[in-house]
Length: 526
Image (cartoon, rainbow, N blue to C red):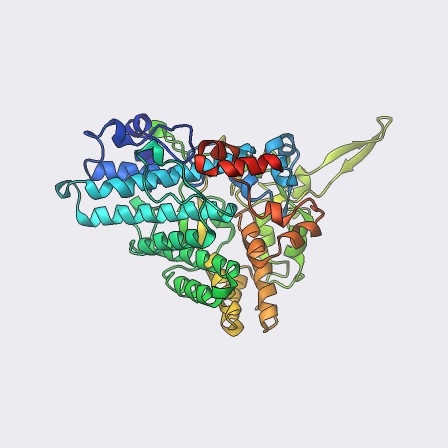
């Protein structure tokens, strides 16, 4: 992937890969340089690099954190907006469920995923035409299968966020073919699963120079997630889809849980044994590379030199402490301390000084005065803030950039999704050992309970505290039919699943795609 990274930002692609006003289309390089592009293996890799470049808007230093987390995380029930985040109306709309189809953040999310689809379709349409003397058949097949994986991934992200989307299965060269209607969910699931199925022919491992490029394990894992989600949406084929999900998860081989949970997020254990598909970042900006960002500022609170955008709420903190101090360490679940800084004996240990060489109260304090200005002393307050995705040391905290890799699929997720599929198939006894693997890494004893209801509740508990900030919770809640229950429970009663389980089609797309004109009128009537 590091090789791919620098291909992405090459001057050639910067000149050739332009964009037009429709989110679904980007001008093709071969339209401008048919005699100079798609000639050989290098051109194929350059096209593939462009397809990778749209993963999670990762090549945009601002869009990556400021689109991904507001769009995906702010509608979950585990966070509160920090002081600075509240100054952005387009973010606040997402958190308060007051957005319209003109919201800029999910419009960018829609746009970038369709641009990724467009680049993937260019690869799929043009690489087969490269003369055989200019590319080996093995390399051609590899690049094609990666493009299928990426096209499936982009469609999956869209379908997880919109009730219906436009399937783009070919690169469009004729503007008259731009208008296309929304597809039904069943049809779209078939399409996504088909692309992931083709991608399972990818190699199981990658060389060090190819880290970050898709593997067969990634294809099987995402295919399993697609089947699992679909199983709840289509009750008439639930057993079939759960069985297919289980079969896919069983193909995810060669991975294991990393010993140190915190290391997966602080940049010290990149491309670990747990990582199945990982977004590659670097602080190196040689030759104009732009795979770096400021996640320590976005995630961090102002007491830790951050921007105070997103904080754990009491719902999340309560879940961490739900089982009590029963870990083998004598404390709460270790994921609490590895994910959150908060006021407690662990972080106020005057010898260990576990908050970047300080105690928690060294940093989280303020002087107190009454209305007359009389000094009242020091308030050592408790403001839970995320440690997850923060640097491991003070040097990293003080650096201008902090760009750890971001894991988009890891083995812990596969284990818990596999346990869920087994349990829903009436096999809780087989699910429990998988759950206990995840618990053991967190220094927790085996779960109690043996029934399907027990396992279902335990899986929800584990997923809440295993994946904060990984933006899986809302998809979990919707899969289980619990979005309203969860959000209303924390006082966010404006949430209406009929309106907010999925985002509306962005206004720009409604205006650009003639096949969706009826939806424009429908929005205006509302």
